[in-house]
Image (cartoon, rainbow, N blue to C red):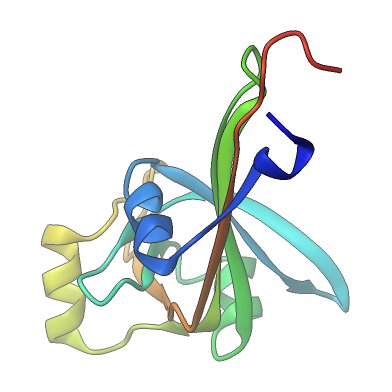
Length: 140
């Protein structure tokens, strides 16, 4: 395998297929003019947007509502030096429509932390990029 064969760019459909396989990713946003990264569980909606469920009083909600953020998820195997990484970039919006909230209460992600009055955040999948790494045992 040549060094150029180790990485492969993923198309949008393959990125979304891989995202649907993992339960946790990371939101990348700006907090007090500095980069911030927060691990959070998520799901994909039918339109391929990323859905988060969190507290309406969280710093995350206040920092990302209405702004462009990145969301990254991945899966790696250190033993084989292989895996993938997908990044979704788009505008984040706190969902306020009662019908949408009701639908997502049934089908969307549920927070891993106990919440009262949870809110859903949608990250539009305006740009979806990813790459896959195929490692080889015994390579340095």
